[in-house]
Length: 286
Image (cartoon, rainbow, N blue to C red; front, top):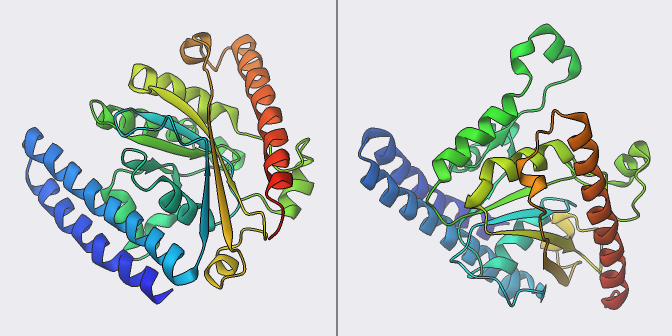
């Protein structure tokens, strides 16, 4: 844990140092170079996280379906979500395989000292969910996340990146699974609205949609279990999802399109759930 903290401080200060220059210098070409520099520091952070996990903790990373991946494309990554260990799995498994990550994150993370400011400097889309009561009191809050996403994708134009979204919207815990009445054995229900808008907003910027499964065959996937050696293996599964043209051009506010989009996502999620079951059966507890 100390090594992870030191790793974050060392590379995070590099990110924040360049971010200060980015705020002060309005020249577009220089700002682009500074973005590349911040992404390089973030890469080093991920690389060192992998080294700590593999060589200090002793975690084995199992990669499935990684052969087609390249750093020369822009990806949208749709993943399941178990715990904070997923971020370690992301860093460790994809180190050297993908372009810089931009993760949809909760705005509350902004208030974590250093870590939150690093996320902001790296242009992570910071989302804030509002209750129905809050929206009723202030209608301007409706669609705020959509406006944030649109603005971020405008900033990403012309850059090779991968955008990660946890479509379940929260960590999959037994009590949440039960409260939701999820029809899936290993997943919560996916949030279709955010995905629909992201696909439309990215448009031609996105080359590939990847379905990502973060799996922990030997435990529940809790971060503390991982760091204390009780999860010896992390399995990360990747497969490309074909996206029909109409799913990127329709209007989610239209009830007919929304029903069509949700049916497409439900079919995908059912396949994903079955795939997770097969992988967990194949990689039974060591």
